[in-house]
Image (tube, rainbow, N blue to C red; front, side, top):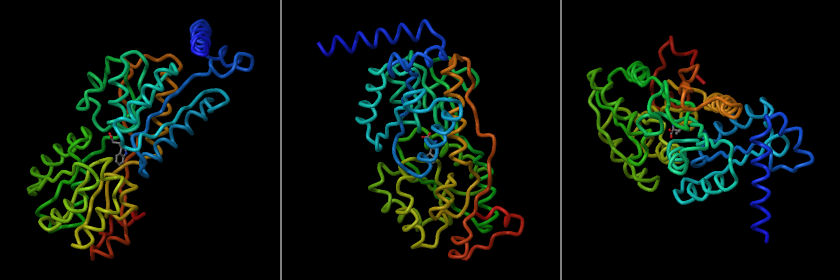
Length: 328
Ligand code: TRP
């Protein structure tokens, strides 16, 4: 009996939604309950400072545009704690609840959503390389039910910064997780850039945060600096990485502002919160009728150099005059 009732309610709300514009649906919500409110499911891969800032940016931007959880929208923010089966359970929950739009924060989360539906619009939240992750046909014309924001950053500028701070740099370690399409794509590019600059590279991958300490220690022995892409596995365990590299006096160039704050030396990167608000804007556009198939992937508006003065002093690295303004 209960089952029948709820499917009836869902059917009714579907009828309402398809026959009314969103503002009509809103004004009816007081009599018809919350079922007619736009339902936004947000799947966050895991918790680390960068992804937390991104989801905060999304929620704030949705609120600014008039989508407030429990009032004018149902915003269902779920964190999978890095677990594949959690991602599936959460995805099924969104689909059962007839989400109007689903947002995936980080590549594995977006892939879990994309595997489950070709119909419900999916918004990419900070996906480094949507093409390599097989989420869209092209950046300009995604071609499917998926569009959103990429957090791709200029890796060549990161390497120029590295050379400025470590002038006698010869060998760079590239450290990332073997299971993240986002990291594989950036690491391939980093390798090419390093070689073009005459640097040699040693690549090492981790399977999970559990082997990070050991892999980082052995890499730090053989290199002058370590570069890390926007890797979710490493971002959850930045302290572990920094402990291993500090023991050898090796600077880390992560691709992420929050990881510089946590003990990396420097990066050219972007503001994670701003990537979140940008993702929120795309979500609003799609909710209000834009077609993901023809909505180009968005890129960050601003990149910045971020330096950790304390770490530089600790490693006896002098920050050149022209970079002093970028100290955070
Ligand atoms: N770009 C990552 C991905 O595609 C997600 C991400 C955004 C991230 N900001 C980050 C990962 C900071 C690590 C650190 O999955």
